[in-house]
Length: 96
Image (cartoon, rainbow, N blue to C red; front, top):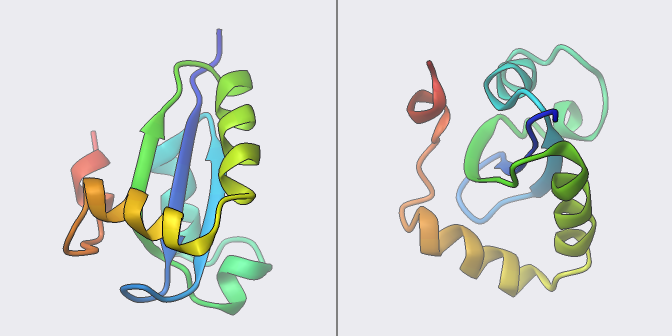
């Protein structure tokens, strides 16, 4: 079974929110921070990891990501603030 994570990155506290899914959270956030791929997160400079959730496996993570993408912005902000009230960049906390 492949690991699965859902995460939210932003460009500043309560700024643009991007929800993503990955099997390698540390590696994926490193890619966002270093602008490895062109696209939405690169264009909006979404490099700050503000929320993440271990879903156990990638299939479950994909389902969770799809549900979160339909949430209202206020619900996403509340989810972030439950885990990370200061909107700190959590990248250092996930480094192995």
